Image (cartoon, rainbow, N blue to C red; front, side, top):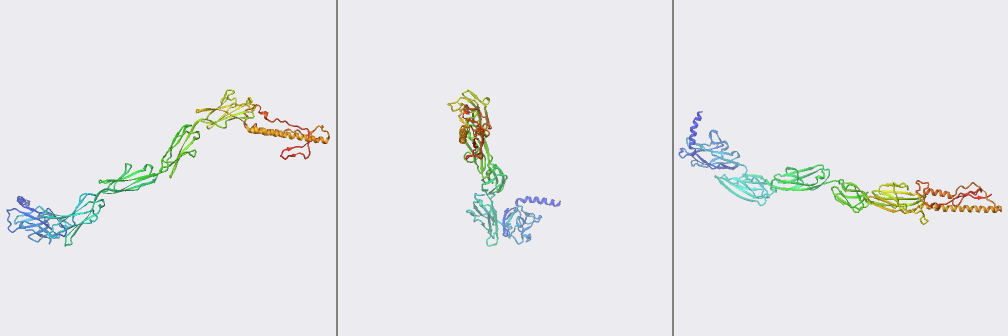
Length: 631
C-alpha cells in the first residue's frame, strides 16, 4: 500500500511533464529477412532539464516499462542486451542531439514487433515514450492484388520491397509473364516518414485462359545471395464462356438416358436444366447431370443447360427424340350413308419416326399410302359396292397398329337378272329378285286381273325370302289362260320393288324351261323310232309265215305274254324325273295345250308268240330285242 502512496505523487509529476516528453519514429517499418533495418528516431525532453552527465537511452522490445522486464534491444550505458540482439544492434543517432535512430542487422522474422525508446537525462529524469515503431520482417515481397480480377478488364499488380537498409538496395523482377498479352512494367520509389519502399507494377488485361495461371515477384539484393520470391495464382472472374452438353440423341420408349452439362466459368456457376421453359434441375457446380428413367414420348423435346455465375449467362440446347411404335389410330365411327353422297375418312395416330398410313377395304388397298400422322380417305359419289370394312393401318420400323370402321351404303332397289317367268309343266312360275338397302319389299301386279299380289295375298302361292340386302319373291300361276298367237299362254306379270329410297316396276319376261322341252323332243323321236321298228318286225314275220304255209291270210298267234310297256313309256318316266314331276318342289302351274306336245303312247300285246331258240339277244346298239315267230 505504501508503494501506491509513493507512486501517486510520482505519477502526478510525470503527468505535469508529459507535455514536454515527445518522440518521433515511424509507426510501421519493414525489412527483408537476413537484411538490416534502420528505425529513424528523434525525441524531446523538457527544456528546463540540464543533463549533467549526458543523455542516455534504452531500446526495448514489446514493452516500454522496465518494471515489466522487456527484452533490451540496445542500451547506451552498457552492452547488456537480450540474447537475440547480441551483435545485431547499433545506435546510429547521437542521443545528445536527441537522435535515437537504431540499426538492427541480420533481422529475422522473430524480431518482428514493437520497439520502444526510453530516455535517461540524469537523475530522476527518465521517461519511457509510449509511442512505438512496429517492425515487420518479411520473408517474401508483398504483392498488392485487387479484391477482384475480372476478365477483359485492365489489371494492375504491384510488388513491394522495403528499402530501409543503408548498405543494401533491393531490385524487383516479375516472373512467368511470357504468356501474358502485352504486359507493361513500371518501377516506383516511395519514401515516407524516413522509411522507403520500392515497387514494380505489372499491367495487363487478363483473359479467362489466365485463370489459375501463376505469376511471381522476385526481390533480390545485388552482390548478395539474398533472394526473395512470391508466387500468386490468378483468380480471374469470367462469365460462362462455354457450355458442353450431349449431342442430340434418340432413345427408345421405356429406356433410360442421362443428359450431361459442363460449364466453364469462374466462379462456379448456378447450372440448371430446362425442359422447354420449365426448370427441372439445378445446382451450383461446374457440371450437372439430368437422368431420365422409363422415357415416354412426353419426354421428347428441347433440353437447355443454362450457366449463370453473376458475370454472365450462357446456354446450350439439345433435342431428345423418343422413338416408339405407332399408337392405335383414331378413325371415324362406323356410319351409314346414302348412295351418291361423299365422305372423308380420317385416320390420326402418333409414332416416331412418323408412320406410314394405309387404307384397306376388306383387305384390299383402298387409297394412297401416306407418311405422317394424319391420312384422309375421300370417297366421292359413293356406290353400294363401296360398302364394307375400312381399316387404317399405321406402320413404322418399331411396330404397327390399326383401327377399323364399317361403311354401310343405303340405296334404292335394283333388279337382278334372275328375275323372270318360266314355263313349267303345270303352268308358269314367276321369280323376282332385287337388292337394296334397306332390303326391298317385292309385290307382283297382274294387270289383266288388275290385282296386286304380296305376302298378304295367298291366292297364287306367294313366297318371299330375304337374305341380307337381297329379297326374293315367287308366285305360281296355275290358270292356263289364253294362247297368244297359238305359241303358248299369255303371261302378263309385273314385279314391283321398293324401299325408302325408291320404287321400280318391271315386266317379267316369259321363258320356256329348256330342259323340259328338250326331253319332250328327244322322247317323241325315240318313241316313233321304236314303234316303226316293231311294225317292221311284225311285217317281216308275217311275210315269212305266209311263205312257209302258203296261206297269207292265216292269223298270227303269239304265245309270249303281253309286252306291258315300251321304251317310250320308260323314256317318259325318265323325262318326268328330270323336269321335276317327282322332284323336290311342286310344279307351280299348268299351261293350256302344253300336254298336247307330250307323246301319246300305248302298250302292244301280241298273243301266241313264242321266242325262237337262240333268237333272243342284243342288237348292235345295245338294245334288247326278241325275234317273233308265228306257229
